[in-house]
Image (cartoon, rainbow, N blue to C red; front, side):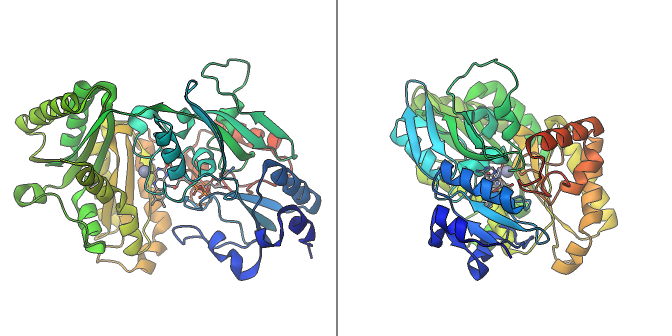
Length: 471
Ligand code: FAD
Ligand code: ZN
């Protein structure tokens, strides 16, 4: 029996949770995984984390780092078969400094993403990472999963938004790599090794993140499209017309929007008539550094051309911030609506943009041949070649029937992704959900190198065991 008294001495009794109090920490957001933990421990400082890591080493207890627990592949959920604690970083939520000349901000890992966006705005800057979970996910989790979101097209993944890290290693040493440098070629890039490692190589306790100028004006529109190929051609047109000012390009199948308004009746479909009957929709955002008028003229010129070339059947341009919010809100509500309809089988894939229409029609057909009646819930960041290609029960299956076919469905979709030279995880990571699939699709040399890195940095397998790799 492990005594938790030393942990209580480190963080205080109210921050060592046990029993029923751990429930929300040991269940993932999708409720696909329920784990077990000796305790949930909530440190307030890097030094607390160091002491907790030493405690874990001394007692042979594994450690599962956790931020907002919004991850979608069970990466922050402990394995019920191993002795572990959940290390929740939510109390480490201090913005340590803001440097507007260097355009950087040093923040602790538990800072909520939305709070960082707000802090940047108050300093007259933009922190562009943005996603549906931003009200509860943390920057530590964003970096540990190399999160993407809706602005990747212009600003890159979380990786591109980070200049430095502070990491507590598996042996309790602190790596202070919080440098705010845009250029640094002094050897191996440890920062990029920890980013995207899903808590398996080190615990991120703080980060230096990049700030950008705030756009002067933004324009948002939704366009109704006759096919996915039209969306790809529209993306090319928008890239040509807007260049680096194109900050968002999302694609959404009609049934996703219908699902949102069914679940959330206060939201409205933006189209009527022919526009409402199209199978696909694109959500575009332009960010301009000159003026409202300049933005609007550029936006309308490209949208006008899209309509003239019949790439789009109809377009709705937001006339105000509220209308723009409503269009984005429709898009961001899709995962919430999916959750309300019951468990589904999610694929977060990327393939070259040009191959996406072919991939979707062929994979839909393969699935319908094997599982007639499953519903395709397809949406995502077309500008990044990243689709959330989800499979739901529709009316043909019950939730249990669908989940019973989970591995077969994964196999069909992942084989197809592989055939199109894509990736089985574009942004959510591997966690425990996709761990065993990685073995089938990752280059064997790459996988062996990953094992060697894990062995070198965490030889006792204390950090998030069983995630990403089966060790
Ligand atoms: P958690 O879920 O707590 O943890 C995720 C992983 O990171 C785990 O493996 C955990 O062990 C590890 N981890 C957490 N904190 C640390 C730390 N400090 N040090 C080391 N490891 C750590 N993701 C996208 O990429 N793009 C999207 O557009 C997107 N949209 C979403 C929309 C919704 C509605 C939801 C629920 C999720 C969405 N996600 C998206 C997934 C998720 O929100 C992100 O992956 C997010 O980055 C996870 O942050 P978190 O703080 O909740 O991490
Ligand atoms: Zn996404």
